[in-house]
Image (cartoon, rainbow, N blue to C red; front, side):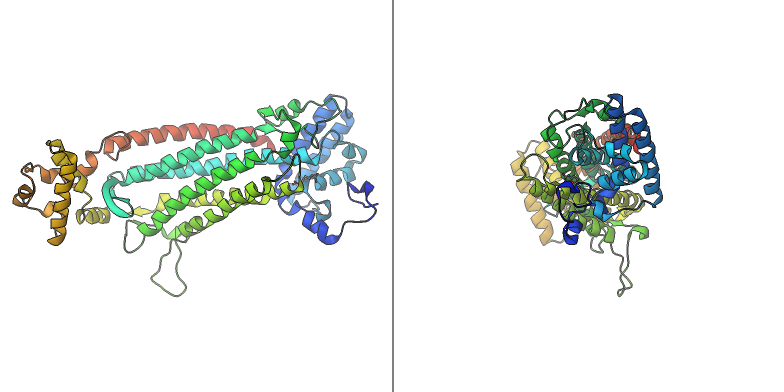
Length: 475
Ligand code: ARG
């Protein structure tokens, strides 16, 4: 007989390489808090319904708490032979308290146990992650206020298009990350259902009360189908989808920060604290953080595709393939956590070169649409106004001028509708000021967006604090 915890029907020990290959302890040890809390709740439910004795429950609870202390303090003897966190803890408990420990796994399977742990782990870590996401949102809003008057060229096709307020640009990222927060909320809700009680796959013959365990562990509800409970990994896929979209947003911002800080653009300067130098070129200041975050987006996407692929051919209920769910999710959590943390600091400390962005705008044709609008507002059909301004731009390029360099004679030769006030209409300030349409870049519209952003941050903070409080029992 093998001396594994499941060794009864075996006649020889597992090969060493098979054992190593099977083990998940090196990474699922992260879920020890969840595993211990889950087992304490399980023992309580078993004792409440006479499935184990109160004395056994007390011994189990005490034993588990001292194991938690050992793990917290780094003295717990983890063993690869015991495969995963669940069996490491259970074996230790049984060594310490004897038969009572061996009764803990009544009316439970590692299949519902590992799913339970992962649900709680995700809830706790979504709460932690949400704080970092909010910190980036706060930094974006603060930057939009700090550089309230800075105007920079807005681009389409990477060609200068129309002037926009820097604040408006930051608030576009705010809007993206605000949606990410909503997605994170959905993720939390998806994780907020307890699979415990499903046992291996079919439920149990014992008079269990999974809703009591769920309640003790602060879950909103319990899975209604035991097969689904042990085989569902949708909540992880949903988290990885959120993580991929959020990483994509950070990657786009990274791309902008990278080119904005080139000598060619000089729109921003990243703080020295978030930049690195070159080992050979003394003049260099490199945006490594942005590049790394852009680069790490690839691995987050990889984890999403990886788990989707793991799951796509699996028959119900539990299959060992599903042990592959954790490493990618843990790495995505870590990657995003650090990326958001870096971003909050990087945005708060960067400098925006508003004088330079203004100079750039004064030397280009970003005000061409405003010139066409001027004519259209005087009655010329917009298509014709567009053509007049197109010709004017062509004329300016040939004569090395910008639109505001044109004399009144030149303006009038292009259209008799031009009057003195065209100069004012074409000023960079007015191009921005006049765009007060809903969601536009005009200062009043931007101020409305800032007020909305502030309100949203307050709501998100409330939500995040309630998650943190809900999961605080895990320690
Ligand atoms: N370490 C396993 C996992 O993470 C736990 C579940 C194992 N269940 C089983 N029947 N072998 O998936």
